Image (cartoon, rainbow, N blue to C red; front, side, top):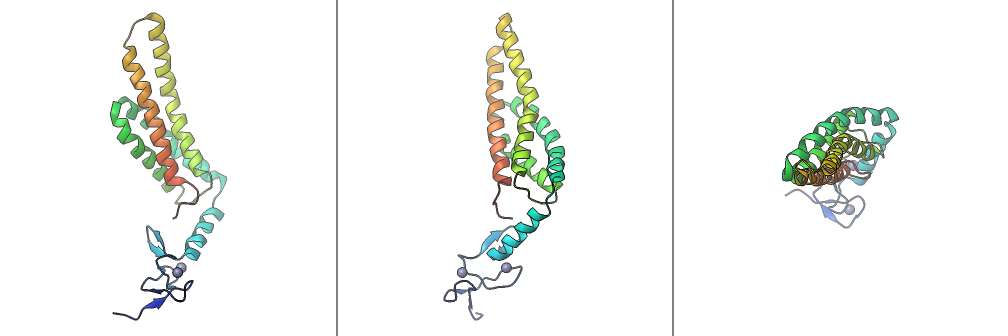
Length: 177
Ligand SMILES: [Zn+2]
Ligand SMILES: [Zn+2]
């Protein structure tokens, strides 16, 4: 067993943990779990400041250019699969969010979530309008499979809600790196 270290912020707390960026000993309370390991709060904050400082408006545009086509395909495909939308909606939302994040090289803007969620909504809108139009026509003429189309509308809404919330969770401001 190695000698216990003492947390830099809590000199009385023994710990075996070190920040994997600066090497400072940190206790469980001070450690922040990131995908690349435990880090101290200072390092996490510094990293986040770099992401924000490096962020330009053009990155919103890049995120949108990647997210919108994906959202348009997903917005057509997933609601058409019926109840699968419950499972695939969140997956699609997370996938679109990750793709947008990859496109802007993990940079973070305070409104990236808004851009991506907006793309998901905009990508679904044409399909939603088409469906809505066909429902109105069916009701007007009294023909067509109205119940099925109404269910389609339900799956569209399920997809929209689950996908946008999954994307928001991935990209929300303040989420640790
Ligand atoms: Zn550190
Ligand atoms: Zn501590």
